[in-house]
Length: 116
Image 1 (spheres, one colour):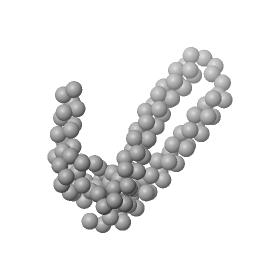
Image 2 (spheres, rainbow, N blue to C red):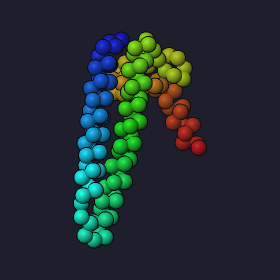
Image 3 (cartoon, rainbow, N blue to C red):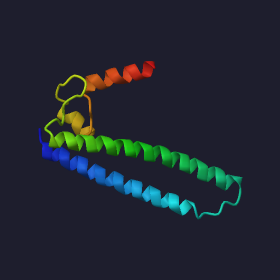
Image 4 (tube, rainbow, N blue to C red):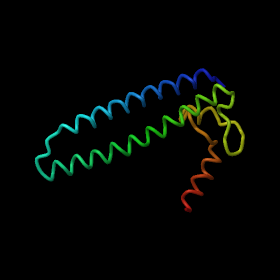
């Protein structure tokens, strides 16, 4: 497996997420100075904030997973499924370089979560 390739993917995505978070924070600061003229403006701002907050939380989660994957690379544990201990296929890692589980184990986890 080409660990340098995956390290590069992870670092590039980490940089992109950090930039996205900074941009979103700046936009939130700008919203504090916006004049709200009516209920429509207020509703629009609230809806935008709700969407931005959901995106922000998802990006924070992804950033944490990327940092965990980078640590695994440093410790020689990258690309190993946390559930079964088997190697995660390189094609899966190309799609999601911070994947914690192989496809089979991920499906098991998703089925268990859907039952709850």
